[in-house]
Image (cartoon, rainbow, N blue to C red; front, side, top):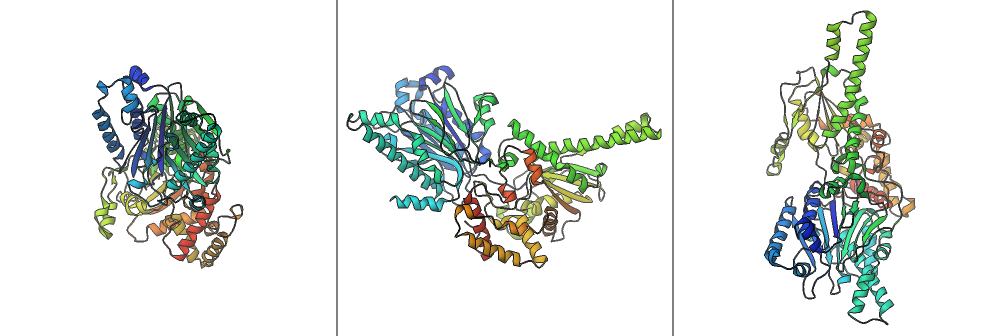
Length: 629
């Protein structure tokens, strides 16, 4: 299993009742904090580089903190954060405090909660890059907490816009730039209300009027239309307004639930179902281009900010990242497994009796179940035909029927990921040797030199784990042939919307296509593609096209697969015959009809920014530069 890393996961909570209500009903002042912890822990798969939380109190006493933030780095960041926060809450002494004292003074106990799990796709790391980001101001309505699951493809353009308005961001990152852009719009919204009421009201009444009348729809509509990328941007003002905005193509996921007690938003539906114990039908998907907005007074509204554009919901979310406990995702992953069965039958020459079927732990398990369902259907067809033939020939008796019905698929758990070896402590061949032992195998199942081992994985991206570990591990079983199946198509293009697949030269499919061009004396295609990519840089957004498709155009999927095998086994250390079987694009879309975003497979980017960046990535590759944006 090649580990892919996702940009982020988000969680937001708005308590709609006073804190004392939750104490009386649920027996705890920390009801909201506990729900935030669970929402984050259940989404731990989405980011293990760092985490952060933010809390806003709606009823603080002046001179006391009302916007709290805690962040930490590393895979144990969630536990570290909540350990620190719980210590501060305990030190406050909830047991001896009155409801008013808790409402006004207790740290990290408020009405708005924000959580974020981070994995960087930009190469920037450290506590200063962990969300949520905070823009401070002495007026509560100008404070802004922000986090998100996003990657902006036109951050340069947005940065120039921010500079043109006279701002001077202290860090160059899309998060900081968006924070400052939204902060400026929030300032303008404050000014708008101030001008409207300044002649009839005086402070502090005017300040409260501004807080009560902020229009977050206006704030979002004045900034977000120029953003290009996949995003779910979450924010909260210090005065109590909360929002979450999703990109118009629905590239990044967002789901929400609300009743008369609570509003919750998260990156995954089953997380909300589990944490709040609510039925699936009550958890709604946030419509692409729309924002979930909760006002200071607690009014919940879904506002159309950007308009819904063509559906580009990310298929990799369904294949790999999201929790398989979602009913739809579970069924989709099974369908992916079933859809590769015809290609598997071809690869084993239809010989089910001498094939052993397994999966690469752990994320391919559901696709494996679907694959087995499809193979069972193929076996049942064979059994039916054998029975009919025996009946026609007059040879069908109890013994023959028992032989036919006794045929079963040979389904085994061959690969066991039992330990996490620290390969970074070694170099060169020593490192490769360690990597080859990340998986252990089950011996005594495969007949030497006779059986074919068929192992399914959810994706093959860089080929590193396949070469250094999986093939070597399976070859120890001495099969005649090894068929590695990918339940997703060949990953051919970088992702620029939040998944850690941004460097062109890393993809084994791309490297194979380049080698095929060289093998066949077609290097001119590389030069022509480079020139075409360079020309694209001067074109307008609506004029640009993905020139990198030309690298793959001369070859079929099978030709590229065979070249990948050649590259993976070039050292001659694998004895078995190797074949790769990939999902087709048609099979992908049949299995996951609701999430057609497939740019990493097809090169069809949903926004101009993605197309610009893939052309730029090829230019960098061709020029020999570090493959950066």
